[in-house]
Length: 233
Ligand code: SF4
Image (cartoon, rainbow, N blue to C red; front, top):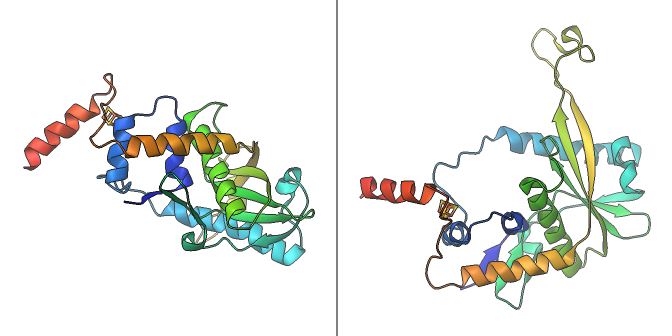
């Protein structure tokens, strides 16, 4: 059976505390877990933020100022559908996904940008480790499908601004709507193809185990899941 994985799903293995059992079960469940409600507002925000970069480039032939630190760009490439942004790896994994924004640099190389509605976390935080793998995963796929060479990766954290002495209520409220501003904060992500290859091997090893691996002894959630299952039968 083909093992399908996205760069984001692979990124969960970058957490030094990851659980083999959880990953094995999630893969069997095709990464659809019960009670995992995801508010649609974040997808709407992501789309809006991505469109700002695209529309700004279309209108002014340059990227918004906050992206200048990533280099000089000539165009935005359309992000391919996952069916055209995938690679079949020798270890049986079909590695695929959908990247955020693909920026073509003046030297012809590709820069992959990810927009997040989130606060940046401290170095080494498990979410930052996940993002590093996610972006490096997109780089691996982009190079393989001929969109590269990928020369850089970056994240824009769109941080919502609070009302304070800088943002006055009178300047943001009108009769039937209000404006919320976001402060873009950027972080360059290091290219690290070796990390992705290492985690892809680890993922294949876990998924190919014929029975469910043991969970973490300090995690009580497995016992709760067993209890839930007993009630549900
Ligand atoms: S031990 Fe915890 S983390 Fe691992 S499978 Fe069970 S619930 Fe998930």
